[in-house]
Length: 152
Image 1 (cartoon, helix red, strand yellow):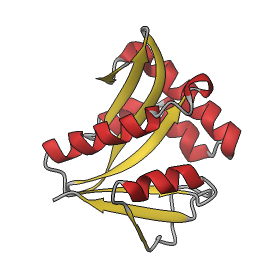
Image 2 (image 1 turned 90 degrees about the vertical axis):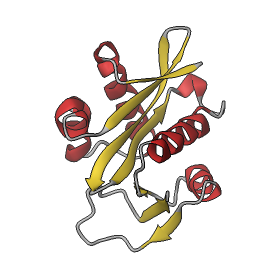
Image 3 (image 1 turned 120 degrees about the vertical axis):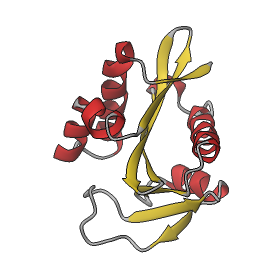
Image 4 (image 1 turned 135 degrees about the horizontal axis):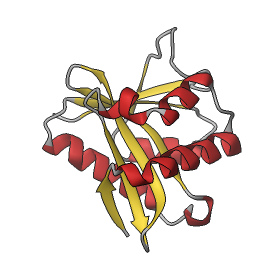
């Protein structure tokens, strides 16, 4: 397994993995559809990053770091293929994004999630994310928890 930065040839995998994950656990919101359909416009062109996990040249996981505020990124769009869940790929992606953000001197990461995702919340807390107040105009209807990790 290796983690690589965004490569246009895997753009459809970014969309497909995330849509499958959303349909399995929640539903696809209009904002999700927009971002996943146009990752260059919503993530990359704004200074964000997308990473892929490759196993035998196939994408089995993905994650994005989307600009949120000055020197702050939103950890978002993390998804692992159903066949590869439970193999700590999400944990490896999280570790990779934390190392990446620190090495590029970002101040903090934020994320939106849902407490129904107990394993994800446990993992975020394990790596130092803490719950912070969620604003009223949250970008995701399914979100009921906002967390941050101060990196510096």
